[in-house]
Amino acid sequence: MTTTLFDAIQEVRKSYPEKRSAIIPALRLAQEAHGGWLPEEAFREVAEALDVTPAYCLSIASFYDMFHTEPVGRHVVEVCTNVSCALSGAQAVVDAFERELGIHVGETSEDDSVTLRAVECLGGCGWATVVAVDNRHRLHVRAADVPGIVKELGG
Amino acid sequence: MSTPEIVFAGTNGGAVTELAEYEAGGGLTALRRAREMTPDEIIAELNASNLRGRGGAFFPTGRKWSFVPKPEQNPRPHYLVVNADESEPGTFKDREIMLRVPFRFLEGCLIAARGIESTHVFVYIRGEYEREWEVLVHALGQLRKGKHLDGTTIVLHRGAGAYICGEETALLESLEGERGQPRTKPPFPAIAGLYASPTAVNNVESIATVPPIIEMGGAEYAKLGLESSTGTRVFSLSGNVVNPGNYELPHGFPLNELIYDVGGGIPDGRSLKAVIPGGSSTPILTAAEAERVTLDFDSLSQAGTAIGSAAVIVMDDRACMVQLGIRVSQFYEHESCGKCTPCRVGTRWLTQILKKIEAGAGTHEDLDLLLDVGERINGTCLCPLGDSDAIAVASYVAKFREEFLAHVAEGACPFHGTSSLDGVVAPTDVHAAHVGPADIPRPLEVVA
Image (cartoon, rainbow over all chains, first blue to last red; front, side, top):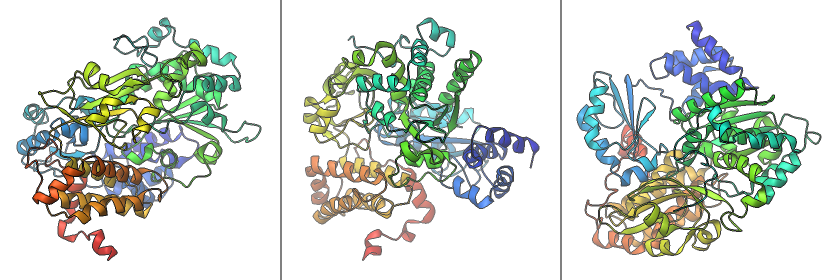
């Protein structure tokens, strides 16, 4: 493990009276250090840094939507398809991404540049359709905006 | 239209993200006043204001704080936990509060902490709210630098994507480093919450309303809105309206005026079909019902629904109500934590029955089955997540029964592909694709 990840986890651990409370921030740091997902090695590293078991780390990671236990592309594009976005044309945005990237929702492009996901409400219902690109929210996205976003991501 | 701004006061439609600007506008006055008050006096002001929780449960905030034992009754550390895990579909108000008035929110945290005699605050902020977290980090840094924290620590804790963590005991589990699954109650968090210590859990908007209440006095605040629903509310307006967005309005504001005057009406020359008034957990209103109600606890309760998180979702005549049911049910199915069987199995079962009806293969018995499954979820679980699905779907069947029957009679969706909700892909569809539809046991068969 890089000492930086170990040290960074020790740093966030200080914010909490009990070490297990630091598991989410620790997993987030590990995911960032491993290119956006959590391989087995990451669980061993977090386990060592927090003095817990790798199995416990996996049990937490598998519960939360923002942790990925399978490889993802260099960029992750997430389209909200919950009710308010759906009423405002979210599926047309999903279709446009599938067309531009040549993949289906849930897949990663062949050159590993982009993973496309449909996600539950991102909390931007008044600014539909909301698309999270690497966790940054783009608002009022329309199907016509999609080729530009894909080009920007090098997909 | 001139309506009082309480939460967003002093922003002129923008954001106040620098401490100097906040103080120049009178910011931190309430905190200084609160520090001269005893905790009981703070709680008395909150009781006088009759502020009720803005997260959805509408529980009186002052009363919640008064349940927290005094330090001499329980010497363990006391905690204030702020629920900033806003995830109820349709709701996007807390994020705008954190973005535009971060100091009012943090000032509220400090006053609330004093009210329950706590020096430890955790703000559990939704993992997806990255920008909001950054704004709070910046604001907290300025308060710390200005020595305004006075020995209180505020930890800005980011979640990692789980709707259920908005349920207060699931949130506490998550904050303790466990999977976010609800606890049995009692004990309630006030007695044994975070780390089994006395804990108050409050919503962002409730907390951001605390400084104005201390500043103007609880009695003065109680004059705003209605007697039974005091004060203002930040309404999240979304769906098929010309001007969606967050609007701070007094309780008792007519829903009709929110949609047509504030929201600019229904776009594209369409007509209003239905309104979900308080987030996707709340029962739907028909267009005719929406004309009659006002946005407050009593009016919406009398109409058989709830003010919930004040998230108003507007639908025009293009929306198929069976498809709405599928999409809403898929959300709860996806977000069910899996701890209680009726919710884990029932939410998925509801989705499957609705999909069958939408595909034109449904029967009259399937409509009854929908309600029957729902009734077996209601009240049988540790938290209301499954109930939300059951109650929402039951309301679509009750209010739009003709449309459900038309699916059965025609053997197809009467919209024939023209519905605004047609073919929407949900996360659960993608998970199902991984497994392969043929491999999924149907609950009907499992039960039989």
